[in-house]
Image (cartoon, rainbow, N blue to C red; front, side):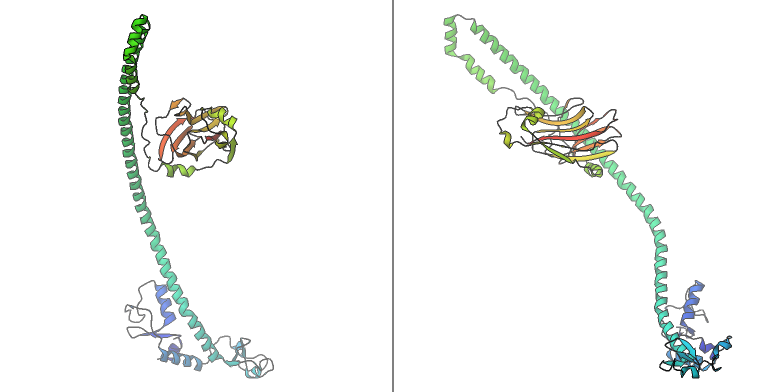
Length: 418
């Protein structure tokens, strides 16, 4: 092998086909060619790249480089300007080239130095040691780059697929919600017909009972006009008393119509995206409580009754807002949104053991179960809609429009623990 060729082997490796090449040159050749790895000589495809270094050839190449005189075009730089001799030594401390007299000078006397060829080989070896991990990092980065390129196409395909999946899911949700809506409307219609029938039956019973009571009233009126002796004789027999007792026992009970509060799928998840909080609290005196809720004739000690009001310090002037209030198991509470001097209410008031559950604007009795626990309020200011929800049941209580909104709306809660 020619000595000049031998010098080019910085780190000679033998490929599977048997040819020998310089590892760094081989790798750069493959990298720049952008083609499958193959032997530069015979073009045979190379299956692996973790070649072992040809130690013997590496040593020969190193000896060849050290034995060959330097062919530097800048020959003047190889001569010491002070002594006119060739610089053939390398100072390890100053990293400078020296001639023999310079190496003996006091400046370099204690420094370590070696022949230029030997020092250069040592430095080449250090560079080669750095090159292996650097090349591995280059390959790793290429692998990462290839992965990123593949991800680009993969993410495009995945996004297209996911769009279809999301559309399918929402189509399913729309279909499910439509079926749920139909079920709720059908259930409402069925329950309404059943309640109508109960009310009609109750009307008939009450009308019949009223006629019996009127008949008894006429009989009593006639008895009052009887002569004394005849009246006392009838009183002794007392037929009216037994009939009166029987009519009392047969007194029809009024129907309490109540429709089911059916669960609305996902309604709270949607509303909670617009969650806000009331932030002011004040207890009410017994007198203020009676002004708001009235005196229901109860016997509770005012000291054991807690009444208070919660409100938002700032009114709503736009957007959508949702908040919840805990009415607990109390019978007296008022949820309100106030606009100037007009209020929109949902309230529960107890009077003479009868609980009224209603809204105003316009006044409307709510024929659904009175909520216990938390009540949700949703205000859509821009679309002028307000809705109340039973949080525990995840169901709608009532929804109505708020016409001509031009001023702030302030939420209030009045709560009485009686």
